Length: 154
Image (tube, rainbow, N blue to C red; front, side, top):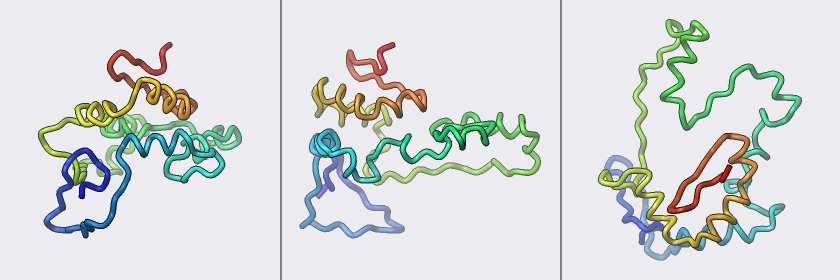
């Protein structure tokens, strides 16, 4: 059982996770369909729009923040931010980030894995998925390119 993924699931030898063969999880296509056909009010909190969870998106909260760092770019901007704040001597940012993704073979990049999953979707599915999360894309300045689709298409 690959737990609904397209890639074989490998267990961490130090912390093996129970693999139950009687569990059948949805494929990526099925997962996307479930998001696209959710009643927005009944959506699972894990797949909801991020702007609904974002405290800084509230106009009253926003004025309290001077800086917003994107976690997706943290490794690139953390050092510059600490220097700007003159905190580089107070904060030890020499930590090493380790990612544990048990379904990611070392031979595949994140982009290749994304392409593998998105080949299951039609362009219409991708566009509808984008439309569902469009405010998140705009708010967090995200973009997405797959094949001939470029989103948002400014």
